[in-house]
Image (tube, rainbow, N blue to C red):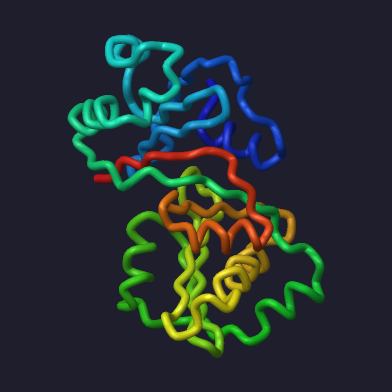
Length: 214
């Protein structure tokens, strides 16, 4: 049986589901994670629901419907979860050059303050979270999120915004995972500054996701 992990690993390798205007229903990847993923010409519902329930609640072929409020609300009611938002999914390969990796990470300090609010939030959705600060107070986090994929998040201090700091942090995240890995970022579409930072750091948009959380 195809799993969401299979699909995401395929995307990391440049292989996407066929744009057949279809809907794939796969099991929820973990007790923590349930989601709807929108890709070009294809939707993936990763939840413990039956194809029959999907057919009752969706007009197959309408690729907007699975990420619209009526279906997401029905999914909340069925699963007892709450929608955490609809984000763009961006993806980049790790920085593999040893010299560049060292240059990007050399001035970072790892945070051990587990009470930091951004770290606390990250640990609700990710495992093995690591957080680092740079000399300007920028924060970059990496962890294992949906299906165990590497995910990152950034925080740029207000006083240094607009100077390319977010772009540098986003590229730094690419140097904090194994050199043969990929890293994902989930960005609220309305956050134009964050979107520009990740695009400028070499991330590419590959789809959208709606995460349903307990």
